[in-house]
Length: 88
Image (cartoon, helix red, strand yellow):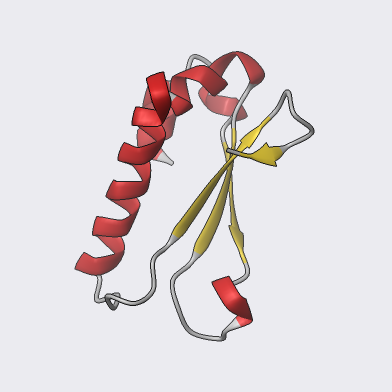
């Protein structure tokens, strides 16, 4: 939340929602949904998806640092406000 708010021009529009675990399992890596203002969307995705990949890498690294295993990976769905909220 803190990192994304620092990237965008409208930090109050940042919404991060926890989703059910991947694969419907009770235990495992968390899955997150990120929504931002339409004009901030390109800033969060970045050129060629570089910023999005960096955010996902940070999420993965923090999950592993907190004791997450090597088999589960946390998910970050960045929702496109212009495309009916489809993930990127």
